Length: 76
Image: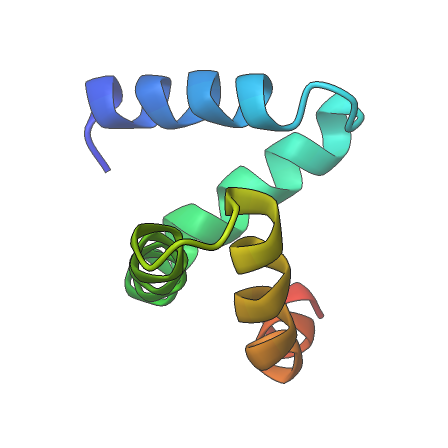
């Protein structure tokens, strides 16, 4: 991942996950760097639900539940 893109991703994570400890944010960033296609797919699904009228939080929760097994596998 390019330096600028990596920097922007870190800044977005800090803004969205401001209450999450730094170590957890770094862990999520590492997962995203290793599996960018998977997280792009999740982001696209969330955006699709938001555009159809769901709140961002509700859309994120639904999509994350749908991909829970894959996320757990990646986090091991």
